[in-house]
Image 1 (cartoon, rainbow, N blue to C red):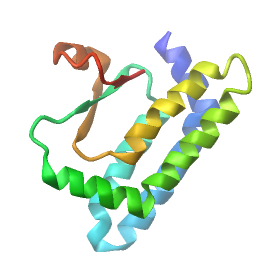
Image 2: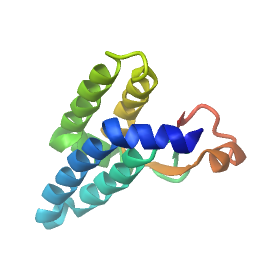
Image 3: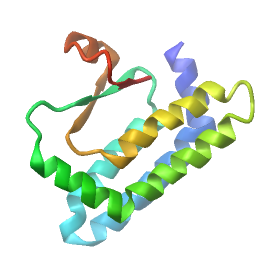
Image 4: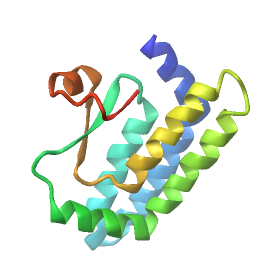
Length: 137
């Protein structure tokens, strides 16, 4: 079932989200200082292409640096990417078949605004870690 959901997701949302995040990563790679932001954008881009069966969980040892990175990320481009998810989610919710995918887009808004201090793992790994309240698809 996850495979079918991922294929439908890729056709209707995943490819375009990947393009948006890849563009953001490319802009971040232009400036040396923002390379960590580009890496975070690529990590989310690959998650956005094939999200079902994976989960976003908090990293245990991240602290002030991640918080500062999240603030800078939000100011520099996170809100644009969140807007991309919002628009895509609303468009997908216009059809009955697209509603679950639109809701998945709304879940990705949180990830797009605060990528630092989190990691993307399989749903099974998240369950093994006891992270049931995480963003999962």
